[in-house]
Amino acid sequence: MHRALIAHGLHAESFTLLSKGVLVDSEAARAFLKLSERAAKAGFDMRIASAFRSYDRQTRIINEKWLGQRGVLNDQGDSLNRNMLTDEQWLEAILRFSALPGTSRHHWGTDLDIWDAAAVDPHYTLSLTGAEYGPGGVFEEMTQWLDARIAADDAEGFFKPYDQDRGGVAPEPWHISYRTVAGRYPALVSLESLMPLWTGLPDTEGEAHEPLAMLSVLSPIGDDVMQRYVIIE
Image (cartoon, rainbow, N blue to C red):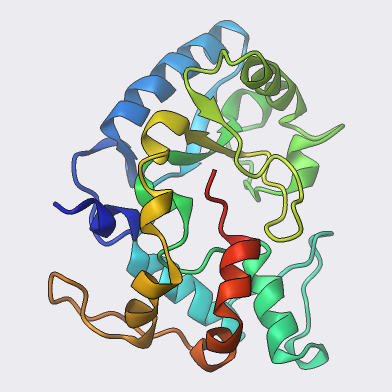
């Protein structure tokens, strides 16, 4: 299978099913199991909340947010009012926390959203917010432990691509990436390769996809969006 199809979330070739609904690149899966074993020895039950996400799933999420069918939050976790923002402001608010289809690192099977099941009761509702992972948060201790491992280059090859605010995507302390495999894909993610998919044209396998609902707003600022919201490290 062509790597570009994997990079854009159109196929999950050679991925491993780690648990129900959790598909991970095979090499990244082995590395995560080693990391989680080490975490367990430190007292943490490190689990995956989200791994591979397909192009079509990401398109549905983005379109529902654009159309107001799914909530859009600000950095403080408050719901935003669509009527109070311009089209470009609304798009930027969406992209702060959700990637455009074809640009999400979750397409690669190398990037995982993690949490610590040992820190909460079985009925806890995970929200993946900074408050959970920051000072006083339920996952603060696991975050500190993992960040120390990453700083020492001792985290089985994982790092955090959204470790700080670079003016686009909000920090995501729950998001880790397996660098060795993830490094294969950024060069394949470009505006030129994605625009046909966003318009709804068939991919190279002949499969058609739902067009982006905000394409008329996105097209004139596509280059800037790619610069600000696509982490290619």
